[in-house]
Length: 418
Image (cartoon, rainbow, N blue to C red; front, side, top):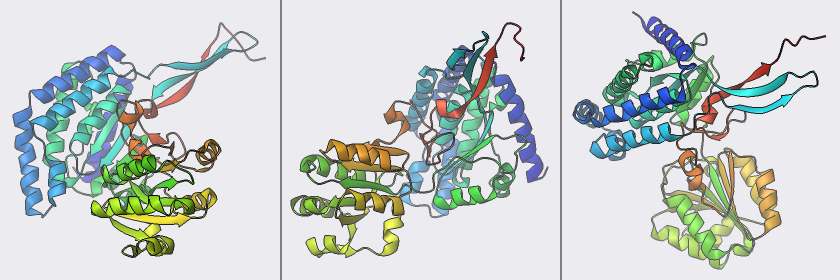
């Protein structure tokens, strides 16, 4: 069987599973997820054995210690996966929810009902836990999924998908609700991206190069974000301690995440005491500062920023800093260089806060809060499959509701159109 035939068969099986899942009750889904959690806990030895194969190959291939850490499955992480599945099971089921129902003059009722999207292809890198998280979220929202993880985690992802299928099948649900692509051949990704007869949506999770390739080759709608170029603007009259705490957290809590601050914009009124304090703290923490001429004038040790720096997502201990004349200049900078992911204003001025939230066009706009809060779990969605910077269908964290669509429901009593 060639790659195209393999992927086509997986698509057909996923479509058949999706049709069955559309009629499954919330209780059946939750029972299946409970079985998945129990199966994960009982399969620690099986999981770590397969994971060791990936780790050995990763070491041989020269993966960094950080990459190897992300790849590692141990008892703690297996337990965390099981707990995540149980948390998803405990969330309200959005499927079948009827919203906005109203009665027309002739007496029939019209409303919208939440329904599964159908079949979702998820393409991701590195962390094996995404296999379980994605499969559990799709199952709870009534979707079948085809999972294509990174080649560095092929053994881990395959065994995780097998455990998921075994548990789901034992609970009476279709085993093909979640399938993992069994090959590392990159042609499988290209084949998946053209299965528009069977797959309804593609969600990529990974680096910019991967997402760009998917956008250029997919004949299926894609929900994604390319960059997380997140800004924090410190307004005139901002509380210095609050601003310092927010900026430090936004950059240093986890610098390698998409919601970490990459550029700090500082009102010129704050370019004295505050700027010196925050730059000193970043220097103490080993952050490389790339600044505008005014920033460099305030602290000569700062490296002058090049034009391309303002449009760079570092995912590292590197930070751009620019002193701006006012909020308009800050918002102009965000509009020019931002990626519509997360942007923050630190201010005590209510009118400025209102303007910023209305005029900054990003998936999440925050007032007096760290950009690191932009996360589905933190927002109260229970879990997320990713963060979207698109404007159609879903924007921001994608939880269970965002993995559903709406259909119109009409309730009549023999009503006809005149």
